[in-house]
Length: 62
Image (tube, rainbow, N blue to C red):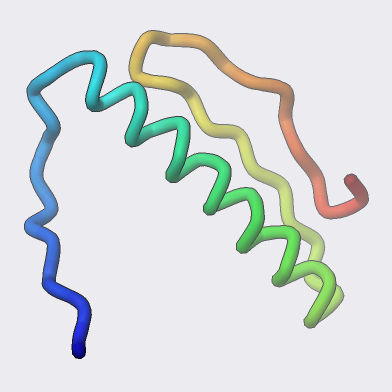
């Protein structure tokens, strides 16, 4: 069984968009952490939420 392709388009529902953002943000930070662990690459990320909040910056040392 293969994964279905998800059409990449803007989520119009504000609440659904915020939930999606929160889940994907966690995944992106996890991937950055894995990149640091596996390759020793220095990684720094800053992601601004759709509502304008800027979470604490994360660096590869965290």
